[in-house]
Image (cartoon, rainbow, N blue to C red; front, side, top):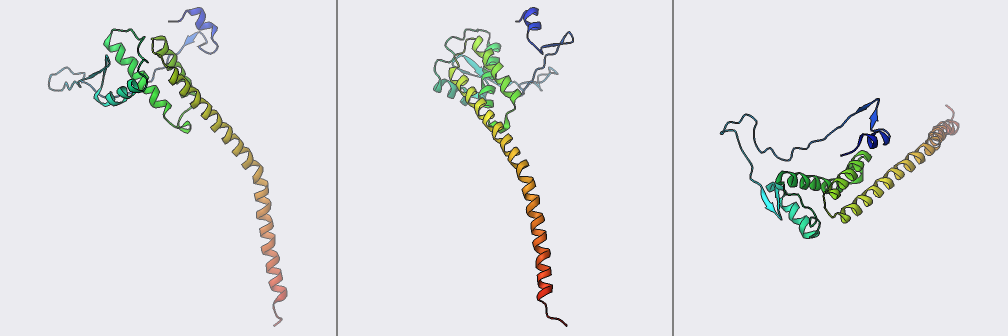
Length: 187
């Protein structure tokens, strides 16, 4: 929740009196159909992993999280199973995002990752390890952008020299032709 005063205080959130909220939804698995007939209803069973109901495809990832960071959910107190699943899905998505290469990540994506991390921390997750990882990924992204900028600058500086080399090679070829003509015996 955010007050209207806070909303207006943050630059860029309200433009011309309008607030636009954009949500990205990733479908992990289809667990049913909308038509309601019993034949088409293919509900996927979930698996309980340390109190979180997850899809079978997520079990290994969630178990690995609990093995690597045993107490990350120790202060998480939500009882609603749907909300717990939603939070776990956000956490899994965040960890997958941070495992991608900096080249695959946009600055907007990293901003969204920071917002997701804040959202999870506010819910009670202890995620110092993930915050550190996000910092490292942001630093790598910054280095990547700096390297690309330097490479582009060097390439621009190199272009006049490349052109000069091509011009000199053309002159050398012309001079070699004249030399060959000068050395040729007279008919």
